[in-house]
Length: 86
Image (cartoon, rainbow, N blue to C red):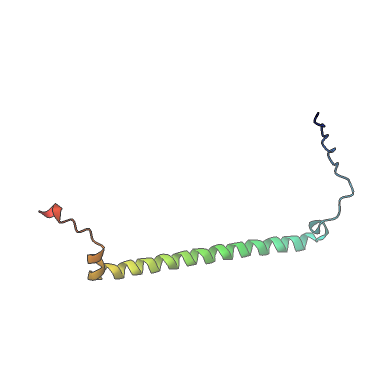
């Protein structure tokens, strides 16, 4: 049986009667205001993430400082290789 060759569909041509998009219908002032709001939201989100990172870093440092003063923790997590000192 011979295989049938399939013809690819003809590429669609973009018509000049494109439907109007929301961007086209909005006034330039409203569009600028929306962009400014987007920028401010992105900046506030970045600031919030940075603040959270700094808080986590401060908590980690405080925990490490507390552990450094805890003799039991240091004893449990130290390398006890007594062969070095024989």
